[in-house]
Amino acid sequence: MNHLKYSKLEKSLPAHTYAAKIPAEELRRHPFKWIVLDDDPTGTQTVHGVPVYTGWSVPLLCEALKAPGNLFFLLTNSRGLTETETAALHREITQNVLAASGETGVKYLYISRSDSTLRGHFPLETDLLAEGLRGDYGHTDGVILYPFFPEGGRYTVGNIHYVRYGDDLVPASETEFAKDVTFGYKSSDLREYAEEKTGGKVKAEDVLCVSLEDGNADLFRSIRSILRLNRPGPHGISS
Picture (cartoon, rainbow, N blue to C red):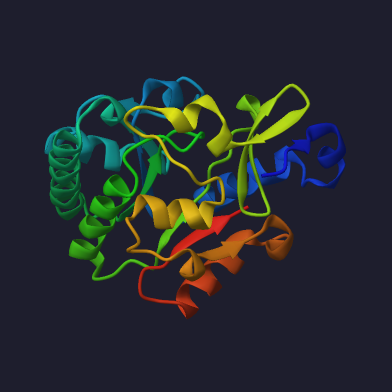
């Protein structure tokens, strides 16, 4: 698979500020409370001005849902757990969130914050979060993969996920991260990655792709339109 030169590509890429700004704006105007489940402390170390909780009892979640702001983190450390432990943890969290939402009347949605080099319990965690949402809302429209971390040099271009080394953008499957004993993978194309990690349950050709250019000034409207037209439950990629 071809490597890219960041210096040549940089001029054609949307500004980092644009890619980072649009989710923040959407979060601010969305009426729900966003619950970010972080599978490793490196995620919460890069944020500021938002609450971070290391527990998820119903009383604590009630407090978090009623607190000012529309987003908070739950530090699960699930990347260091087995699949069985991770499944039990996420079922406990979704059940407790459902109970806390019922007590407070606050509606919510989930963000699963994982590794920008594609390591983690995917699709196990997102499947369980979707299951929890279906138990409350009746359905989910899809799962959006958004592996973007400019500070660490992680970009997706043409649906291929890259890791930056100096001026070289190397396909993620050719890096040491893809050789991880627990979370290794063979595909840099996120459509093929989804098929690989779901064991063929999601076919690469069924994965929907949305680019920043396609979305222009309203990426989230484009994503919503695509998901609504393609129910039930496809996986979508923004590249």
